[in-house]
Length: 261
Image (cartoon, rainbow, N blue to C red; front, side, top):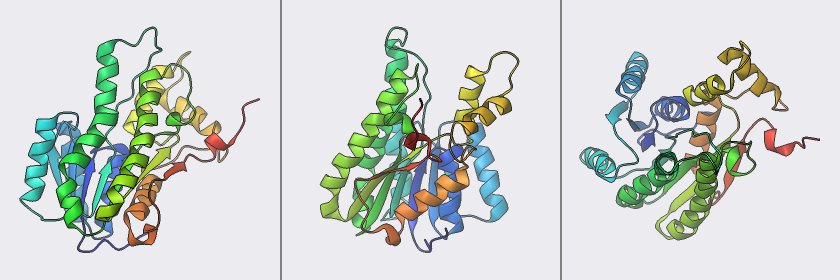
């Protein structure tokens, strides 16, 4: 699904995985994209990829969990444009642990990256979104905010809170012409999923083996791609989704529709 974003401006967090997929889709559709990532190596890879395709994507090194860093990024964006038509919050942190063994530092870091960052970018960039006279915010949540596996206390809690934030923002921001939605991916082949696969791999299994197993747990029989999540995000940012707000869309290959019996 390709939508026309010619003349539109977007800000995206997360310079790999779902964030990069969204940035590429938006830019390929004509948008000017400001892409934020904390890892300079991943930022360089994204910049090289964008340059190779001649895409209008500008990389910024940003810690989205830090207010000063986000304000600095916002200042750079404001120096280039007076409006922002789309904000995509895709930066994420996977944290494993139960309530018994998740330490306060790990809890706080997970909440800062997965939840606080969505607040900070939305709050600080709000004037630019409002000035567009019609804008869209998309938060990347997770199916784990609906139904979760074991050993993901902090992660599941943070993503469930993103769902609540999405609803609250949608109600409050409608008066300014800003729609707010979230997506809840199942297993999507990203560096974050590969990290999780590596953490769970046992008995000589490889990351690819684990990814294949993850895919089998989805009724469609495979994991998703960042092209697929990018397409959905772009749709939610487009005028075609003008009557969609306050909604979480699951892109999970049927994962949460099934019963495990």
